[in-house]
Amino acid sequence: MSSALHISQARALLDQGQPVDLVVVKVRDGSLMYLNSVVSLRYHFYKGTRTIKLLTSHRLITIHDVCIIRINDFDVFL
Image 1 (cartoon, rainbow, N blue to C red):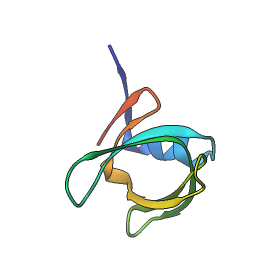
Image 2: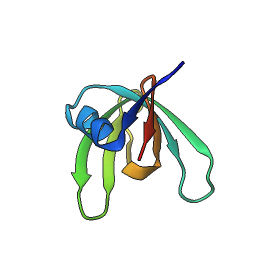
Image 3: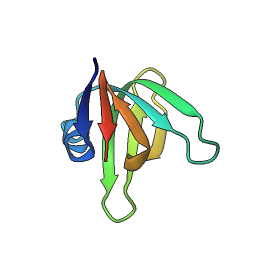
Image 4: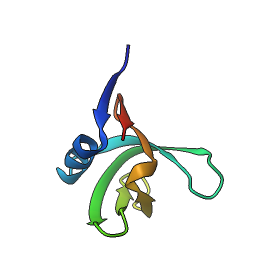
């Protein structure tokens, strides 16, 4: 049985700045993106977007918080 987190708890976890693993739904085509060892850098409150850094490739990606469906071993719900 998997555990779940509310989106506000997931945001608090991301705001700590610790590396996490994410599963995110892509906005363009609905496919899943599996992101390992990422750190949240910035959060834009009005847009609901977050800039994350992939620690393995040092690439920056902007994602929508509502598209996060899994963080570490926890399902994320609204």
